[in-house]
Amino acid sequence: MKKLVVCLLIAMSSGAKGDANFVPLDMELGYWEITTEMNFDEMLAKVPKEQRAMMRQMMSGKMKIPVVKQCITQETYKNMQAKLMETAKTSGNDCALQVIKSSPQEFNGVVTCQDTGTKVTITTKSINSKRHESQIQTDTAGIGQNNIKTIGVWKSATCPAGI
Image (cartoon, rainbow, N blue to C red):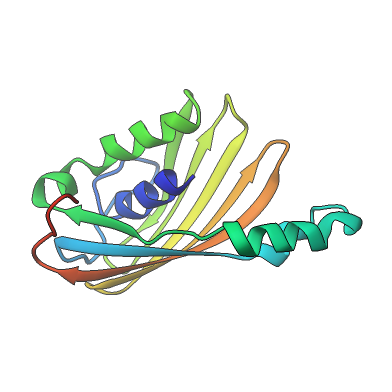
């Protein structure tokens, strides 16, 4: 899931194809860090009432969402659609991206995987060329809906070794 979220965020800055014309987001190249926030109360609402306290305790101790570190080069920037679809295929084999709205300031799109019954709706706003904020809603058959917020922050024009 982490990999899909990161690629979806980055893909919004690329040349993805869909129903609307794609316009890349305003984005600096270089080293980016992406943090993810999930509403655990929303997730726990789906758990039977008698199991919520136990689940809350388990989640608070073990569910640390790491900061994702990405290096966006001119080359990766140009090939984001292929990377997005490659990542989407790890969720299912029959996935499609529909671009609903695309401008330098905002991206709205939907990734649908028919074979897994997964639908991911993405809305990303370019606050400026060094900060993007996304609202991601996943709807997976048998699991239900989850809302995720990601914040991508540009850190530097050069990427650390190993990223």
